[in-house]
Image (cartoon, rainbow, N blue to C red; front, side, top):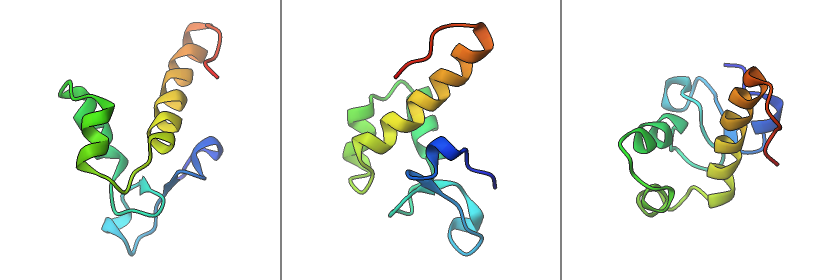
Length: 80
């Protein structure tokens, strides 16, 4: 799995943990859990309460990256 350079400080993947699922550094929480939670209209605070090992900074980095991917495709100013 190729993790974007911008997220290598917050996400990790190795074949020996969670079958190689991309997860938050220092945890066994897959990033998929965050995306699924948000799609179910749960708040970031709710996600963080359920997964206390994940930091707000990690979540914000993932969300900022995703948002900037769409902004690039639409030719919009990037979020900082």
